[in-house]
Structure formats: structure tokens, C-alpha cells
Image 1 (cartoon, helix red, strand yellow):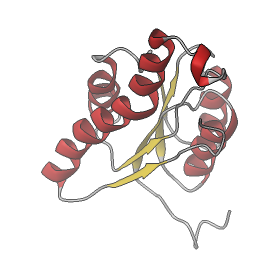
Image 2 (cartoon, rainbow, N blue to C red):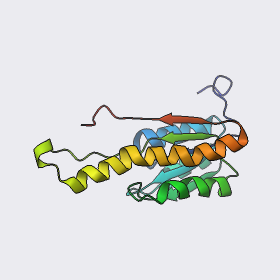
Image 3 (tube, rainbow, N blue to C red):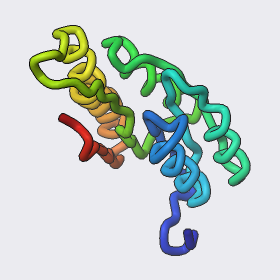
Length: 149
């Protein structure tokens, strides 16, 4: 990426689902563009992504938490506000899928999918939005999968 075309110098971002895949690539690209990045993961450690952020000369803040837990989104915003000094960018990338025909999908699986893929996005936007409104600026990027059902 050309820094002149895409500069995030001095910005701070929170990227959920950043331990691998698209989230890890977004976190690394943000760091290459000059942002410090709070890197969230749940079942996969964030070490590799944090190393990529640090290799770009930026600060990485590793975060862990199950987004099905209603208390986690608020904490995921609070920790980088404290540890990085704020958040200007929130990327809601984390998501899960449990593939099964609808007639075989257990209520518990459905509830978990809704908590992670929908409710946590709202809670993260609300928590980060409060901080962004206080600062007078911010960006939220919500990512959805074409593989959802």
C-alpha cells in the first residue's frame, strides 16, 4: 500500500476477528498505513497478527474474548481506549457459522450465531460510538460473509 494514498498515521484501530484471515490482513494493512491496532481473537491466538503490526513499526494490543458474552464488547473497546489512548476506527470482522439444515439447527447454536454475528456488532458500535462521539470523529466498518445462512 502506498502510504500517501492511504495514510492512517497516528490513528488507532480495533479489529475483531483479527487472529487470522481477512481480519489479520486488515490489521496488518492498517499498521502499514501508520495505525496502532488492537487485535482481537477468540479461539486462535493473536500473536502472529500482533507480530505483523509490530513489524510495521506500530503498537499492537492483543485482545481476547468470546463475542457471545454480552460483557466482552464493552471491554474490547475500553481496553484499547486505555491501552492505546483511543479508537478512531472500529472494524467488526469477527463472525461464526454453524452449518446445518435449518430443521437440524439447535436453538443454542442459533442464539450463539445471533450473539456473535449481530448483537456483538451492535454492542461494539455502541461502545466505540460513545468514544468516537466524545472525540468528534470516527469510522466503523462492518463486514459480513457471503457464506452466512
